[in-house]
Image 1 (tube, rainbow, N blue to C red):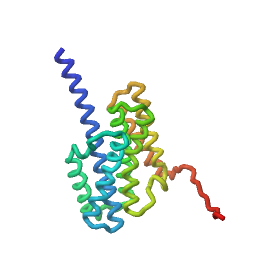
Image 2: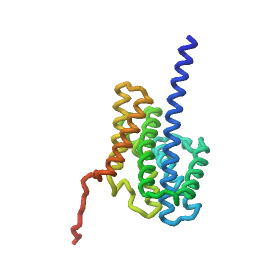
Image 3: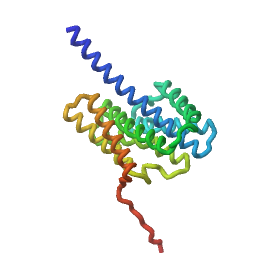
Image 4: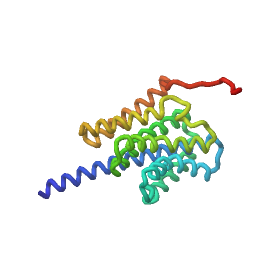
Length: 221
């Protein structure tokens, strides 16, 4: 009996460590993308830190408020705040050595988008919400931080003006639920969703895949 219990605990620990790694990667990636966005607007160190924080933790904060999950996640894990500040300040040091800064920014943003979408889905599932809410929670977590970042930097949010973005988050969330319904191992399913979502986002940037654009120019009389 003891070996089976130990095996179960080991399996649960591996799941937690894998999701923790995804979470930390997402926080660092989005914090760095926020810092780079602030740098393009010539903000001071305080501004860089604020934009990094909002980008990295804003999506999860909005998700928790929508789902009624209190206290908010980052308030129970102050180490996330330290990680955001460190990643933001580190970006100000290494940014000058990044030759292709725009590509780095887009790559970091893509990593954060996919990772946070998966984290949002997992959070809603743990709270027992139905599938449609799980998908919405994943998308809110994935795209909200970037929207807040761009609005505070006085830019039209990437989600509204570039290649497939929110659609990537939607695809990742739906694939996550499908693999879960097929009883695919949690870690394998998460890895497949992460790799697939990142590949889709990078392909959309490379080949300029876009949704149809609605353009209405008629004047009101």
